[in-house]
Amino acid sequence: MEESVLVTGASSGIGREIAKEVAADGYPVALNARRKDRLEELADQVEDEFDVEARIYPGDLTEEDAASTLKDELDSDGVTVHTLVNNAGYAVYGNFHENSREEELDMLDLNVHAFTDMAKQFVPEMVERGEGGVLNAGSIASHYPTPTMAAYGASKAYVLSFTRALAYEVEPHGVTVTAYCPGPVETEFMERGGVEDSNVGGGMTHTPEEVAEKAWRGYRKGKRIVHPSRSISFFAFLTRLLPEKTSTYLGGNGIEEGLSWKPF
Image (tube, rainbow, N blue to C red; front, side, top):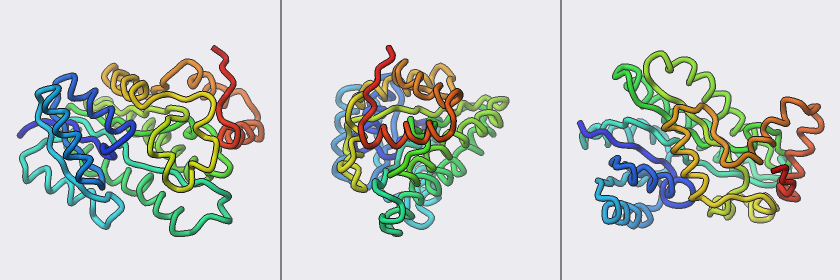
């Protein structure tokens, strides 16, 4: 069977740029997202620029049994997922008691439930083969509680904890698990869940290209946690030193005011 790298949330932003990084390294890609037209455009670009095969698998991972359905489609096409880029996700902005129940639960369905099910579909085969890996989409919010994005921050804390534990379990079997944890990134992520009403993209930001390059290179080097800059690494490190209330204040302040302090 053909070995490929599966990228979820590949139609825009960081997922799209990671797909390009993967293809530039000569690996075939399988692309998943809701928007078929965006996937077709990306697949054509990848094949033209990098001369690798790109298959598309449009679909919403929050639908019932979406992960297992995607796995069945890949098996039917003779595609083995060597690496899963577990990138799909979004945020909901606003006070938890004021946000809609449906928005919050839909977000958690994607960021936690579908995220976990995707790993469940592919990691067992990686362990059996003795090779492969998973690159998970974390965030600086993986390290800090985030008032006004409380459930989103909790979902990204889940990603980081899951990554660390799973990496420990499967490393003896030749499987790598990495989380990339950027700060604010200017992508279409900002247009969903009311996030454009915050200042989460203000101050210290990175481009999708920067984050994708660091994430893919870090995964290839076998790192467990990847930050796109020393400044973001420093903010993550601070949580080990600061009182809980201060960390929570900084997490909320970063959303409302933007990350603007640059220690380096």
